Length: 144
Image (tube, rainbow, N blue to C red; front, side, top):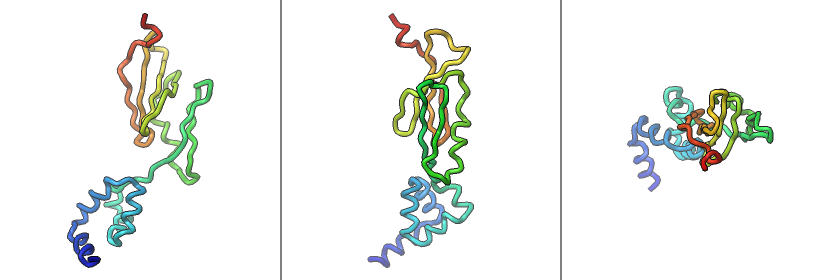
């Protein structure tokens, strides 16, 4: 049976294996690359490494009571990329974290250009550094 498994894995092309492994999370990839010696070499090959899952940056994003600062604290001491995560955040005069779900963060913002009674929101994914501004809405407190 073990010999049959080796033959099955050996029939897969390198590109197909990399495509399969690239769909895994970093943690799952680390487990899988230990299962078959040839798969481990993909993590050291520069051409294939670009396609493989990246290490996930972990940190704690929080906001103080004054809502003026948005620090991010790294949970890994060797995580060099943690400081750049908030660099892509659009600058607003007032940014308030409202909620989060499955890695997405919902923020409410204001600037000197924001009309009274209008709520402006932005959704961010700190892991991918992507931000999307949602269409302006009327604030619930302004509806009679």
